[in-house]
Image 1 (cartoon, rainbow, N blue to C red):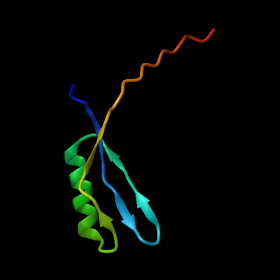
Image 2 (cartoon, rainbow, N blue to C red):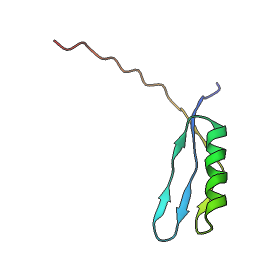
Image 3 (cartoon, rainbow, N blue to C red):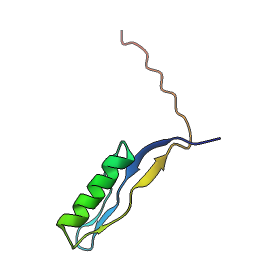
Image 4 (cartoon, rainbow, N blue to C red):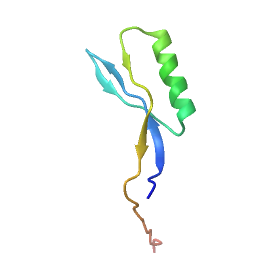
Length: 66
């Protein structure tokens, strides 16, 4: 069974502020963000894009309001 990749996150860390992890819909936009952040600052640690993988399906049923 192949689990689907739902998005990509890039972890950005600063010692004073903490961690921020924005999510992106595809690998290209995540890589573009990571490379741009690395280019404009030197006080952040920026990870490579990491895939977010769906591990279970959740079905939501909405009943019409009366």
